[in-house]
Structures are given as C-alpha cells and as structure tokens.
Length: 83
Length: 256
Image 1 (cartoon, rainbow over the protein chains, first blue to last red):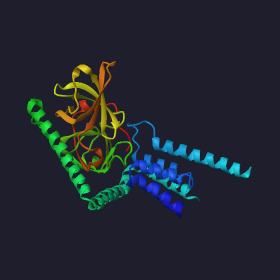
Image 2 (cartoon, chains in turn orange, brown):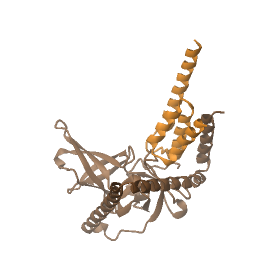
Image 3 (cartoon, each protein chain N blue to C red):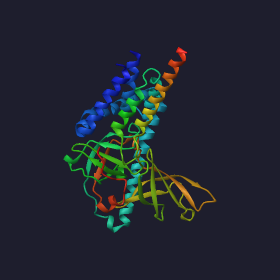
Image 4 (cartoon, rainbow over the protein chains, first blue to last red):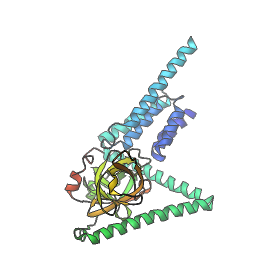
C-alpha cells in the first residue's frame, strides 16, 4: 500500500508541485519501485516538453538513467546475497 | 504487476493521448492544473494565518508585483510619447488564462487556455500586466496554445539596455532570468532598464547584477524580468508583425 501511495504521489507531484519535489519523491521511491522515476520523467515530458527550448527530453532521460541504475544495483544485491 | 509498471503503462497511455489528440489531452489535464492553482492559493492563505509576518510578506509581494507592473507601464508610456511611431499603434489583444507555468512546468513554458478557435495565431506576442512583453506563441491548438518566454533557456532576442538604449542580444537562461554581454564602455549599471521591440521600445526587465572582469573587454549583465513568471495568471496576446517573429529563430512551429 505504501508503494502505491509513493508511486501516486510522485506522479501527482508532476502537476501539483515544483519539479524538484518530484525528483525528491522519485529518489525516495526508487528502492521500492525502480520504474517510478522513468514513469515520472516520461509524464513530466508528456506535459511540459518543448522541442524548441532545450532539445532533449531531459526528464525522461534522467528518469531512465535512474531506473537503469536501480535495476543494476538490485541485480548486484541479489547476486551478492546468493553468493 | 508492480505499482511502477502500472504507473509506466498509464503514463504511456497519457503520452499516446497527447500525441494523437493534443487538444483533448489539454482538456483532460486543465482541471488538474486549475486544482493545483487552487491548492497553491489555499496553502498560501492557510500559512498566512499563522503569523503577521507571513501576511505582510504576502502583501509585500503583491505590492512589489503591482509596483513593477506600474513602473513598466510608465516606462512604456514614456517611450511611446518619445516615439511618434509608437503613438496610436495600440490594438486590442486577446486575453488568455495561463493553465501551466513554471516552476511546475520545468521547461519554462506557459500553456494558455485559448487557441485558434479564439483567433490565437503562431508568432503572436504575449504581454503580462502593465504591458510587459513575455514571449512568443510557439504553437497553437484549437483551444490551447503555448508561449515560449523570452527568458526560456537558449531563447535569444535583440533588445536595448540603459538610458542610451545600447543594442544588446539577450539570452534566456530560464526561471524568468536573462543574460547579455556588452562592452565595458557602455556603462550599464545595476537597475538599468532592458527593452525589447514591440510597438516602440517595451521594457522587459532590469539589470540586477553586472559581472565584470578587468581582463575582458565586456561585462556580463544578469537581467530579471519585470514580472514573475511563477505567478502569472493571464496574458494578453497581440500580433506585433512578422518581421519581429522572423528575427526569433527559436520561436518555431512545434506540436503542443
């Protein structure tokens, strides 16, 4: 249930709060739900991305990087616990 | 299915909606942005009850905003008086509510609640309170449009600075701030007004810091917009002519 609330809060913060809080919530949720940063980044770019302003969809890329890092760390932790 | 996977699937559906039916997408999300505005206003009001200092800070903020708008309007009027071309060129614009603004909108854009159905067109210039120029309409849907502010990252606009109206290229750095480089000899000081083209010269902001290095022939000007982008609730859209828009390569046609 806590994971669900954290996931929902992260996505809701994209609309309701300034983006640094979204980043903070994404960091908080990544140990439990590695896909949440990617989802939040994609959602932020879906709402606000402007091709003329920056070039790259920064939030999607950062979310994807955080998700990949989380999966990598998880795989190492699992391998460590087996060994 | 984990919560993260569920969230990702939902977001992909939202993305598809935006790509396939952008007008419907903004219709769906506008109430959410309105709720966010109401929440921000409500939380501000609640917090202000706890201490007089908070109420004073709020009042101070409102007075500063009004003062900036009046000062800007005054400067614009003074410029019009001194420029014959500026006189009589005012036309009624389209007033549009702001659906999304920074800092919730991290790319420094304004989403407006009026579009082509209300005669909003690409390249129209957006003005805030007191006639302060804010940016250019960079995309239009049937009922929504998007304004890219002059202060958006990497946006450039030609302008003038100071009492001598020295020409300068203004570079947006985001968050309602701009930067420019100018020769030492121009003698620009903190507090000098910065202008952009419109009907005559329109004040857009003030120089808030001047960084100088004795080894360089130029100084860097840090400029703050006259209006706070974070609290803008409406803008006025006016057509200011194709020549001005053609000079802005970043104000291109993009899907919303």
